[in-house]
Image (cartoon, rainbow, N blue to C red):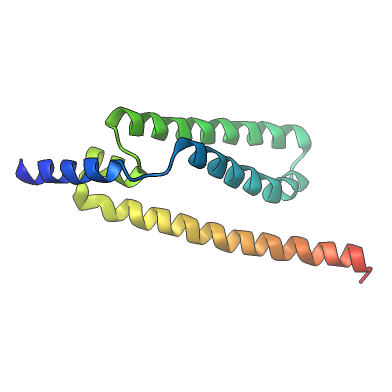
Length: 131
């Protein structure tokens, strides 16, 4: 139809204006490693080491697999963003769902980082200052 062709044309036009792989990969790695460094000690504190490491490895494999699948689908559909991939697979009428999901994911992650940083800095200052 005409509307799907125009949507495809808009997606193709925007596909050229994106970030490079050399910029995206280190950014994603930095975010994943940073989240792991903050949450790993607390998670393993409440679990025994062996089951905790098994769960950690399983979550790591699932996370890496999902990143790979999204990247593979983006390459297969010749798009540069998750939103454009969503438009192609599920249609532009439901694109607001992925926008809201990405916004909430970023917002909730920000809140958790603030909580973790506050918790760690409080404990660090207690240890450093002897309070």
